[in-house]
Amino acid sequence: MTPSLRLILSALVLGTGLVAQDQGPPAPTPPVAAAPRGGIENIEAHRVEPLSYVRRAADIVEVDASLLDLSGDIVLKLGEEGVSLNEFARRAVMFGGLSDVGKQLTTIISDIEIARAVAAGADPADFELEEADQQRKYNEYLTLIKMQGEQAAGDDVALAAEYAADAVRQFEESIEQSVGMENFLNSLSAESRFEKVFLNLPTTPTPLPADYPNWRPTEENPIPAVDLPPPPGVSPVTWDALNLNENTRAMRQLVLTAVESGQPIPALFKGQITSSIRLGILQNLNLQWFFDDSSLPENVICRLGDRDITVANVWPLLSSELNEIDHHLILRELLTLRAMRGVLESANSWLDDEAARAAFRDHEAEYEGTLFPLSAIIMFQGYADLDRYREHYRYRAAYNAWRGPQITDEDLDAHYRRGGRLFFEKGNVLVDLAYKGTAEFGDEFGPDLFDQAEAALLSKVSDLETEQAWREAASALPKPAFRQAISKSDRSFERNQLRLRMSESGLSIFVRGYSMADEIFYRATPGEVIGPHRMDNRRHGWGAEVNTGVWMARVSGYVGTKPLDPMIDTNLLNARQDFLDLNYLYWSQECLEQLVKKASRP
Image (cartoon, rainbow, N blue to C red; front, side):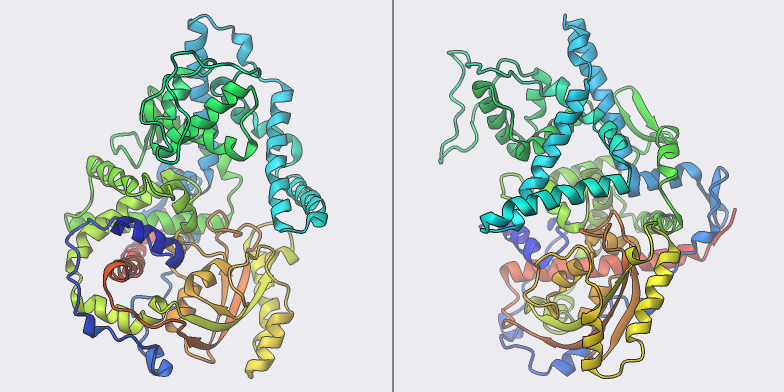
């Protein structure tokens, strides 16, 4: 197994940051004898050596969003400079409006292909969208929802139908309570039209030409070595788009099977195929985002060929969906990125556009041919879109190239054996979690509901002194709506299990500049109460939409579950990466702290 694959596998288990390891020379391996193999001999002594580069709630860098004025061209002053509405709107799009941009991009590439096909003799009526197309797309969604319900029933066949029906009911209720069914069906138009243009496959069995290369996979050759020509009924544009990488070339097999059989592509795979076609077409048409190409005008979000999607195209659609909590997080991210870039530029470590593209190509290449494509890996970090991840990766790569060579053997040894030791022993924190969701107080997402949830939570646990009383009160509170089976116990968690339980992710932690799970795991002491802390990171973590609420935690203790192995091979890679990850977050907030001192209302 290669070191890169070992790092990928370890990242899935341990939650390390997955940043390229070739950004500067690796730290030499310390002597094996320096890393003892036993468990933590004195857990109390261990806890009084917390990681100084893990921020406590009291150290959160505050950003005053009340300084924003979104009514003018300049929304915030930073000393003599200003933050323009265009800059804020572009950041808001990356925060919560990528689906709106995606619909417009999908429409543009569909228009381009329809124009090409009509010029070649196709009938424009072949591409007209019908009501049945939207309903078919909706039925595909229902198929997937039913499958998820059936899977939740496990091996109990009798419960499968009941669970499937309940999953569909909840899905349809969530639509009605949010955008409404009519609006949701209309939102499927762009996707349905895209499929009609690019994935309109034959509906009767269509044999391949007699001279068509043998494409069928074998155990020795799961992906055809030859570059297959488009089969009958498949657009060359579609076929070329699925030539993006090994993962998309493997999807060609499903398309070929559908052509030969005349049967539609299973709903389970169709979404991934259409997403891959869309991504390949956008890449072939040279899509450039504002963070890819610094020469784009300030009001342009992205450029596809000779067509621009501007702030004016998206901001009116998005602005009404955002409230003051969103404005606060958008401003935090905007100022953090601006501050980080300023420091990196001063240190001559900022990556220019071409260097950033090259770094990301290298990063993507680490995952090609593995079981875990990068698009799947980033979901574990809270990213729903590769474009936003790519923008953030530029900062990570620049930081690693700058900071990586400065890491000493002593830095890694101290991180591995002392403050961070529990993490590498797959240690658990024993903790009682108390949660109060905002949904109990209303449907709107806003600060008033958080105020009510916090007051209600404090009334239940703030005056409790004994561990037993705290545990009983916490366990009696309603649990979060979204609770994955990530731990055998609701009291014993590894670090990343705890993050997931509280709907934290790498992205939400970066945007907020703080992780309650990290404070509990690295810096709390037995008997200490952490919180209350408001989890307002909708859009940024698994279950975050339905789990918005307030958390408190009382720590009981810590226990290592495996011996501390020598810091070599994969352990060395993980130690180095975890050290960089934690320091990167801490450093980002130090940068922010200096910039917010200059902020004022325009």
